Length: 328
Length: 298
Ligand SMILES: Nc1ncnc2c1ncn2[C@@H]1O[C@H](COP(=O)(O)OP(=O)(O)O)[C@@H](O)[C@H]1O
Ligand SMILES: [Mg+2]
Image 1 (cartoon, rainbow over the protein chains, first blue to last red):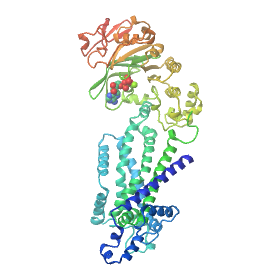
Image 2 (cartoon, chains in turn cyan, orange):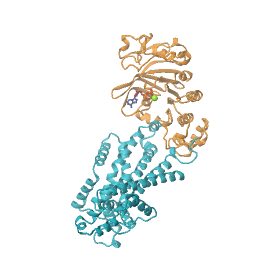
Image 3 (cartoon, each protein chain N blue to C red):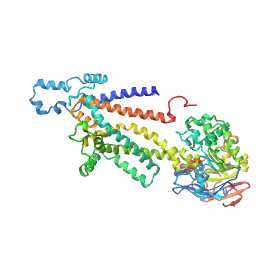
Image 4 (spheres, protein in one colour):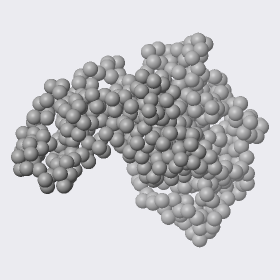
């Protein structure tokens, strides 16, 4: 088991390096010129050549890409994430603050979409072909083809603008000092973004669980359970649930990437100062150290989710269980 | 009669899968239902137990110990008096320990003791109870199924292909357990495509082809070609190794008329008629207009 985890961790480390290289290349060759974006065409026009050169060094565009990447990687993996070019603050500070904002809505969305997605998927699968199944299935399909930013805007208009139930944006009330922000404030501001995120992540898990439930109920072992005289309820508890939960939980662990992806758009719409919004700012502003750090940290979360899925699968599923005594 | 079925027709979306089937099993009797793959054996077994998929419609009369086998009746007897012995490991839940599955999901002491005893009886160490299905060998899985059939006193045992994948001695041993069950007073329906095995152990053999009974006869009749009357049964007999491996080039069973229409050397115009009656001759019931004997009706 330990060896397995080690092997996978190494693989994921290499993957993360690859992701960072890809992000770096995209940044380097993106049409966005950090000088023009952050200093502005007019300001550049009135600057002396010397000043411009200084700025260019600051934004890093004079170094050859390879040197620049190696420098970044050396610092990063020795624990120094660097200084954000836009904010002139240590990247680690910015990230920890943004991450603590995001982690609330991300985990809420992950848990909500998992719990309700699995329940609804099972329900639809058990009632296959009935009205309830049709409603759940078509709603899931509808939502899986709805762009998340559009849905986020709709929710914002409905609940914040018209009904005024929820704040329009941000993660804390305006004009309140950090010490006076209560947990209720945070929850209040997080409800709408996490709701939108969980709705966006749910169709996938619903449809997958439904499909699996149907396969399980058509399986030979359920047929044999029926032949043993077990009631539908007994069949669901003894066989259906367990066999469906296993792949569903695995899928949910592996779907962390989608939640992160969705958060970029949702946070943008809700002006929620989280990691996703920061990624957009850093990307558009050419803030290399900040964006690279966000990319690598996000990739770490996604990889950890996948590893967790794998390990859970090996622990729960006797066919894949680690250790001896497995074969006769 | 433990089981008495007649005029059974099974269809799916108006496609007939099994037509005008009959079956009688007395206490202590082992009846073999023999047929090629796809001839409708499993769907018959499932229909008797009422566990076939919803789109499968089964019409006709099924009596169990003299009474109609209704839905309510099935609820009472399924898994207790009427038991299924399935084919392979896929009939066991991969995530549940074998012992618990044999105990029908129960964990109480009495059930577990019973399982332990049955496992002992069939030469399985009690540690097998703690295994998951994928850790069982093919022969062991079969013994697990047999043990599960004997958790209570079965009156009717339906074994759907209980032997494929087993070597000969193992298959014969499995079959001998069914004989034992019959000796204990149960009626046993053994479904198989292994005619030789059926000859060895059964009292009565029913030959199914294309969803239709071709011939029902005593197992002894298969000792000689002369006591078999249906051309299809004769062809099966000739195809057996000890009788020379003469295989007839039979394609798919014909959908209309006699299923053996295309393979039969004596087929004539009347064989294409959709309803071919049964004829009785000595101890056999034959569905062939050429067999002679007395026409009968169920
Ligand atoms: N639920 C079903 N829906 C449609 N066709 C079915 C269904 N179950 C079985 N069949 C068809 O019925 C025929 C007999 O199947 P089966 O009883 O499994 O045969 P056997 O057990 O003799 O091999 C096959 O042609 C199969 O395709
Ligand atoms: Mg079959």
